[in-house]
Length: 353
Image 1: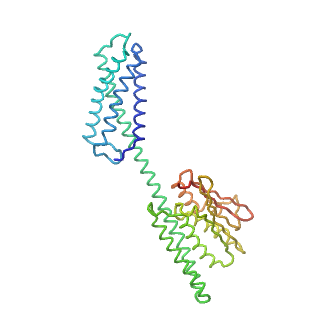
Image 2: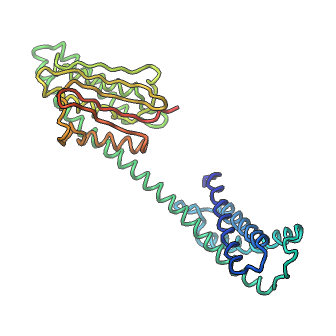
């Protein structure tokens, strides 16, 4: 089981707050007693119980979903911690009260009544506190599992997006190859070379992991091959430029982050336009943020309309979910367009140090 110092400190502070609350309640019902000894006994007993149970649980095999021992070891740990905490805590508090004279000027408490009350309070508070931390750990585990499931779902949707995008692009490319082979073998060879490079980059992106992350350089290289393919298909109707500063080339990014935006620009902006247009993809640093922008000089869009060009298409939705999964609220995408001409899709997220 992983040791989490911050988590332990939080548990200790919560225990102290609980102990102070118990001492305050006791004082409210027994105002004739001095407040300081009540705090001393509550804090001493509570701290020792917390130390034995919350630290001692790491010595036993624990359930993955809670981080706590189960069955007989778990019960014995809780019972032993409460009993040992009661006696050791009383010893520590008795010593402090005698040393600093915290009972001076007050009547000596009835030991029989105090013993009954303190045992009852210790058993109740110890059991409630243990159950609270147990459920806290279980809730944290379930939250982690939900987050992992969300990540896996986003990855599955991304793979689905790739599966939907690439066959369509490949069929179009093969159809163009078949037409070019007879009339322009050189262009057909160039197209085939770019398709092979694109497929190689796609395979490499699908195998990206923590040891070999997918970088901006990889993403731009994949876009280069994709746009070269589209340029052969569209001819002079498609012009493009890729602007990647060298300092940002090794920045890790989620695979297939930019291609849906570029495809959206071509399919809905440039292809329907008779004279075609230009796409510019650029990366830039803005303080601690990385900005990726895809600009086109296509048809623009009706700002009151819905559909892919209005930012509600499947590809754009996947980009949004990919950003949310990887960067949370720090990852954003904005679509800026005019009714007349041109659209900009802009992505921002934190730079990796």
